[in-house]
Amino acid sequence: MPTCEDIREEFAALLDEELDSETRDTIEAHLSNCSDCLRELHTYKRVADLYRGLPEVAAPEGFERDVLRALQPRNPRLAKLRRAFQGGRGLALAAAVLLVSAVGYFMAQSGFPGMTQKARHMEMASQRRAAN
Image (cartoon, helix red, strand yellow):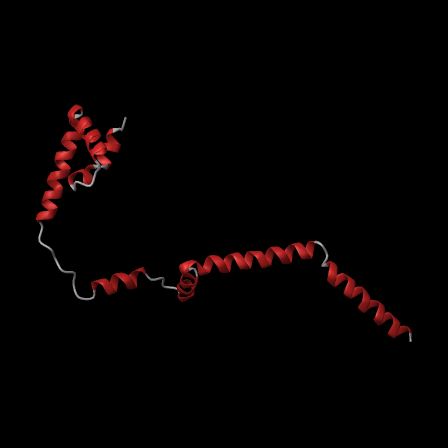
């Protein structure tokens, strides 16, 4: 059974006739038994009607540009970083960096087996040259 809070969250959809019949019936049944929610719905409807009755007002010249500029980061490096992470490219970059770092770490922990063997050969060759 939905709570009063659940019912009140659906008021906008109810007034805009966006609910399926089952949900609408559930809300109407609740409203028939809950005077608090019914009073709240009437208040919500009055506010919505008042709002819809207001005249449209055009935004001042440059308003949209000013808002978009205010939303941009002030630090150019942050802007670059934000652009890099847009569209999933940043996620791929971060995953690649993490993978390379992990491989490097584990290679360093294992002592670079291939490099160690090559280093031993170079050391032996260096010792032979020094002995000659």
